[in-house]
Length: 237
Image 1 (tube, rainbow, N blue to C red):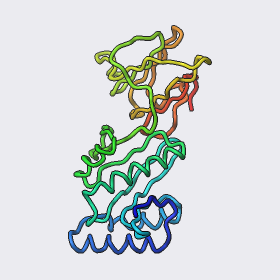
Image 2: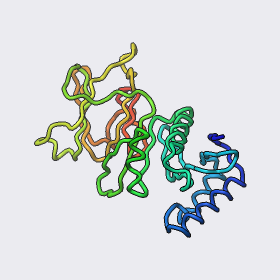
Image 3: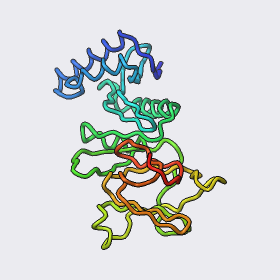
Image 4: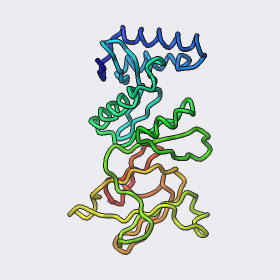
């Protein structure tokens, strides 16, 4: 019987170590080289486990930082791969993270061939300047998506370049803003990967504000990778 275990026991950690050692001895692959992260995450209750008849067959190491979570390691026991177990395990882990008020999950593909698997789990690729890793993310709720053209008086625009380059470039992404009755809370939050030095522009009530993402006077989540905006309150987080 397969089960998602969020409170693993010491014997589960020993089982993981044993099959990671077997995998390394047979193929020189797997996450045995990152072993220190696994007991550490166990001690800090940051380890999601897949068990079969109470035997550990898969695990994920994660970190939660406010509304963002990072999956550092995820692996299934080699003999049980390509049976659909891994996808089910990851989707259940994401539901758990969502219950902890996480809005978006990010990771980088290690090994790189795992990109296809994460695509099947609903993750999208995104680029980070000066980072050659395959970075991916998944939003866990219904978010306000960028659109192709302006259809509202209140608009947020984002360029994938610094301010001095925007004169010769159109914004890469546009959001038509929709509010609750208080005229500041968005009907859906904006959750989008954005580099801190990219140019952002807000037009609201006839006023235009421009600046880099990191300096912008909006209620932005301070997570360093994602632009998470719940309300247009014209104040810096």
